[in-house]
Length: 162
Image (tube, rainbow, N blue to C red; front, side, top):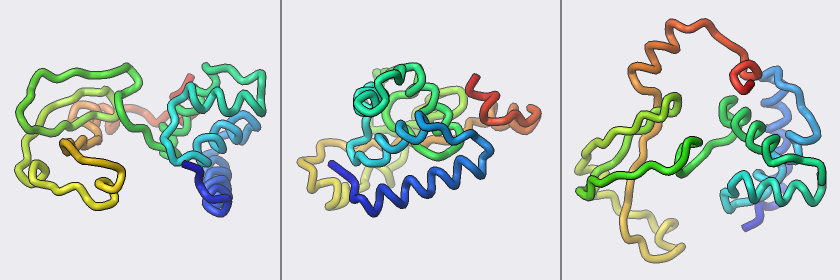
């Protein structure tokens, strides 16, 4: 699914402004990696982004794509979905439940909610096909990491990625 040229232009403008505001250098490679992601509505993985950008920038490495995506994620300019960067997690609890995932350390815990269990999938989701289950994943910062953040000295986004 392709994004309209108008929407792509708006995303690119916002990206450039947000990078400038964060003090991170706007490089050709970062622009092309973000452009590849921004023009797709398919939520591509790093490998798909790399394959797309390499058509325009043949010297681009997969490592650069990953480092750029993690930088943009840490800056809050993109979001991720699915498994954390460490890989898939597994769960033997087959009872209806949901998950809280710490976006800092990856700690994952079950929680139970009748309200979430009873959520009906909206028509916009049902239009893609037959919905079999609904699972809510809440992402945030766990109490332990929140405590560390309050005590830790601030570091720049560029230092964080190194």
